[in-house]
Length: 197
Image (cartoon, rainbow, N blue to C red):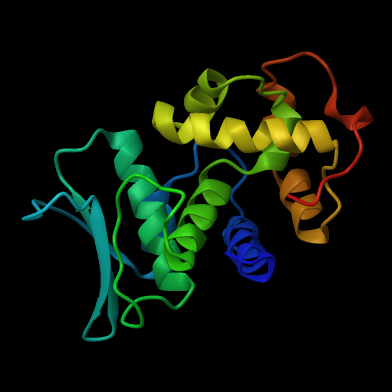
């Protein structure tokens, strides 16, 4: 996936957080979908697909595998919502399973959207997360999703760049009260340099 596609997916997640005035973790995919008029249903797929999205009579619908653990269902819902909001539904053959390095850019874009919606880097940074366990606990995502997100956080910490985007800064300010009461590390992030996550 090229940077422009990455940026579009990331910014879309930030806009949803801002537009819906979401101020704390874990982010409720159920409330977001309800507010956006997206129907979410559990289903028993005939294959190993975790979920899918479609538009039926003008109504966006997300189907999520019934037998998955709730944290994984949440990520799947966010991933499928990404497909809907990014305009992928009906345009491309979509799949939902564990991310792979060889995934096509459409699947990568939906994963970027889901990760940034459920675990915004500036909020994780503000809370001082240092492990996948911190992310798993704060964001109510699966351990695997938390590990992927922590890999990205390590890169961001190494680069030392947070809050360089106006959208990211707005998300951080919107979550500020939450951040103040949910720090996992007592070090203040205010002294760290900005980011372009």
